[in-house]
Image (cartoon, rainbow, N blue to C red; front, side, top):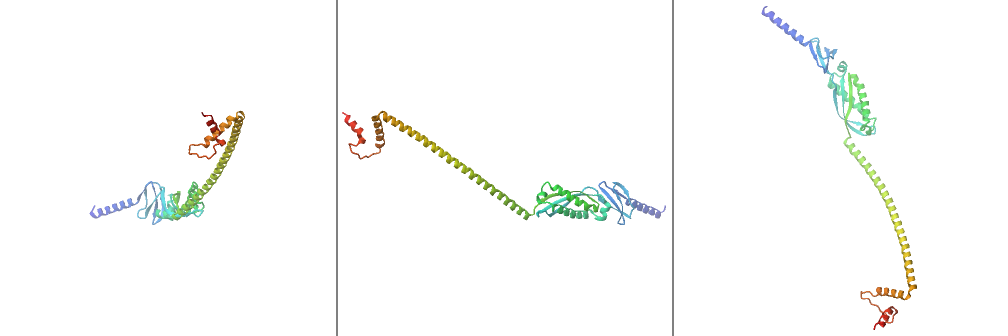
Amino acid sequence: MNRSALVVVVVVALVAAVLGFSSLFTVHQTQQALVLQFGDPRRVVSDPGLHFKIPLIQNIVYIDKRLLHLDSPAFEAIASDQKRLVVNAYLRYRIVDPLLFFQSVRTQANADARLQTIMESSLREAMGTAPLLDIVSTKREQLMIRASEATSAQAANFGIQIADVRIKRTDLPEENSQAIYAEMRAGRELEARQHRAEGAEQSFIIRSRADRTRTETLANARRDSEIIRGEGDGTAVKIFADAFGTDVEFFQFYRTMQAYREALRPEDTTMVLTPDSEFFRYFRDFLDTTP
């Protein structure tokens, strides 16, 4: 074989090798492939492994078949009670129809942009039917189901199946937060004033009852003491009367001694009386009997 023939053989072998290599493609188990011929889809390959295509004429577009995640940037929504909310949400989806997906959105980046718009619209619509309290409470689950169904209905047009739509976080705008805080504070202050007023009323009632009980108790005690004192005075008068009736002279002497004790105190008592005063009768008697 001459040199020219050898070159031809080598060239043919190289071309055959290149054509043979370019006619093969591999599909990973996390992928699905779309075979295009001059940009026109010909077939979908979902089975992983080594596959064949027409070299130089057909090319391959790989599409992920795993569960994909899309985070949405914060956006505003309005509840049914006109409360504005700042919402952070996400969705998870899977490409179930590669041909429809390629024909409608072409790439995953385009799909993410379309799905983000659809998700935000569905969430705004669902949250617009519920008040703020329902959105931040356990009723949120029903709203998420409604938003997920609305998103799935539109995503099906792109060959996409929505697995879930969720809200990660819900905040109030700064101006709304201040307004709601002021409203809550005013409500708590009103409630506190009401409790204070009720407490003051109860305090007045209790104090009035206590004052009335005190007045009644003192009046009863004063009445009982007057009765006892009157009974005691009556008994004392009766005892004095009995004593006076038994020994008049002794009773007069006893009462005169009491008068002396009260009148003649050691604090420089001065009395102006005549010597023959009846008050000093017992002194005179004492002086007359003294040797």
